[in-house]
Every structure is written in C-alpha cells, then in structure tokens.
Length: 67
Image 1 (tube, rainbow, N blue to C red):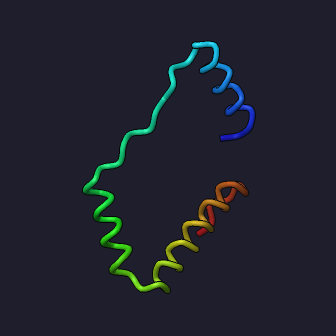
Image 2 (spheres, rainbow, N blue to C red):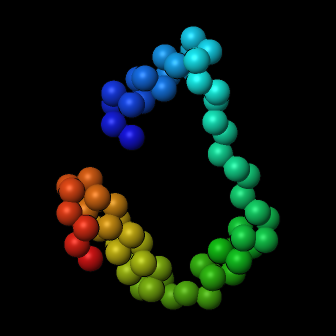
C-alpha cells in the first residue's frame, strides 16, 4: 500500500466513512501445519524459501515480476 492510499484509509476510518477492516484470524490447524513444516525442513531449505519469497516481494516493489 502506498503512502497516499494509507493516508486516505486513515482519514476515512477517522471520519467514519469507511469501516475498519480487521484481518481474519488464522486457523489453528493451519498454524500447526506451518510449524510442522518448519520443523521438518533443514535450515538451508528454510533459508532458500525465505530468500525466494523476499526476491519476489522486492520484484513487485521494483515493478518487475522476475523469478
């Protein structure tokens, strides 16, 4: 979300023009599966997954969708 969108959403919420949207709660089963997957992976594999995810996020920020 860019700064202008963030500012508009804050003003809308403060003036009552937009409802406050709360994120859905995470499913306890989904959290447990994530923890089990994390524990099953080696540190190198977790690092590779995290690096790939960070590269994809930065690619979106830069405007290119390279993998």
